[in-house]
Amino acid sequence: MENRLFGLTYKDVRRLAFQIAETNNIPHNFNKTQGLAGEEPTSIPRAMGFNKVIVDKCFSLFNELMGTCKFSPTKIFNVDETGIITVPKKQPKAITLKRRKQVGIISSAEKGQLTTAAKHTFFRL
Image (cartoon, rainbow, N blue to C red):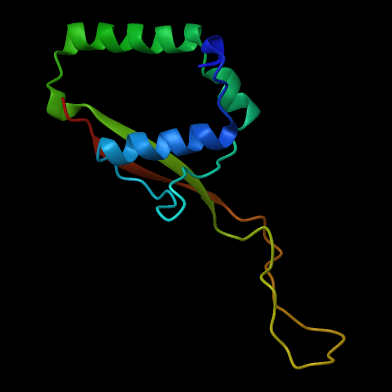
């Protein structure tokens, strides 16, 4: 679009993402009232890890596995993982009576433990 002198704003791209998801019946949690996709920050390591060399390597490995293992399409799925820490980083705000100067709250002195949770979705070919 920029090459044709129709530069898109950040909001235009969010609107297009919403329209693509709606048109293709892709499940999403975008704002239907505003018709916009949400704003999600991307970490620097994640952005740097998504480049042509890495993507080509991923597809090369995939093709190699498909050639040797002969997976059926029903055995290919996407896995999203997230880390959950058992002890929260911040304490929630406490509710108290008016004019109280100090509020007591019990907190854990432990660092907590990281637990990984995974959600998978099957690809449809």
